[in-house]
Length: 101
Image (cartoon, rainbow, N blue to C red; front, top):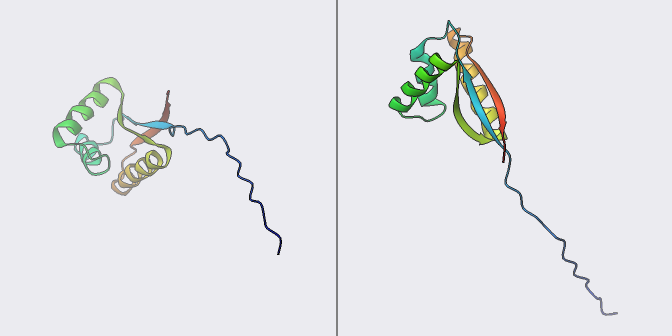
């Protein structure tokens, strides 16, 4: 049996950080403030104080950042929040914005 020669080639590999996305929560005139706080606590894991402050910022400014995550996590959290809102009959709107790196 003939000896086999193994060729070892090193491929140049560069690692990149994954893109991140901000989950933006938008103000509306129908969704209750208490419900927005609940979503921020249960879906985005904010403290009650942080959630209340963010809810007021969204109320006053029209929108706010609920969190920044990798794409899959951002989409999942957006879906969870929208599903909770739909179950309660609220038109809560969330969007994703890519964060510049």
